Amino acid sequence: NKIGVIFDLDGVIVDTAKYHYLAWNNLANALGFEFTEAHNELLKGVSRVRSLEILLEIGNVQLSEEKKQKILVSKNEEYLSYIKKMNANEILPGAEKLLNTLDGLGVKYVLGSASKNAELILNQVDLYHRFYGVVDGNAVSKAKPDPEVFLIGAKKLNLPPKNCIVFEDAIAGVEAANIANMTSVGIGDRETLKQAHFNFNSLTEIPEDFFRKFIV
Ligand code: B16
Ligand code: MG
Image (tube, rainbow, N blue to C red; front, side, top):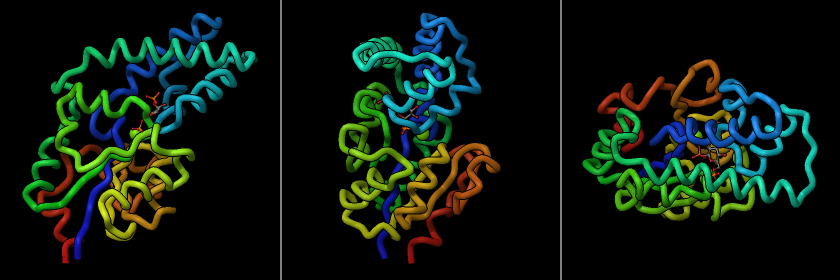
């Protein structure tokens, strides 16, 4: 019985949420309102376009479609300026060890992220070559909690969804994994991610033999 793993990127492998926050906050300030870190929580796992909609709702600001498109481009340019300075030191604790464990077991893993910048980020932290495949925001038409991103991931792994284990930090991502009929592992606050089948505060807490029960 073969298993495969699908990793979310932001919040699981790296903490890019802080860079999204810098760029969104500068944008909000330019529009005349404050965007807090608590507000930023609402954007985790959410697509870029939807993030802007949420931000504008918070600031109670209405903009033309044309202006929104321009803002999305400049937000991403600022975000990329931070991303391009990333290196392997920014890989979250426990991630590399977990990949090593999977390599040792011969378990394949792919990325399943909402980000359109996922390949660049994986390259920056020198992990791109380790993934069997990458499914990102460019490959999907429906955002999490729609299971599309993970179902494409399962196809890449050439496994049925029930044989896939998803590591996620966002509620929408855990929901997407559950809807896809996969095993969901919530990384982060247990209460927030209570819909997950398994919960850990961080990847460092995953026991060495965690995958044993799936490999029968
Ligand atoms: P981009 P994930 C998500 O990454 C982020 O959590 C979310 O905050 C962001 O809006 C989204 O990617 C899109 O990112 O602007 O780079 O396309 O958690 O799905 O890996
Ligand atoms: Mg995430």
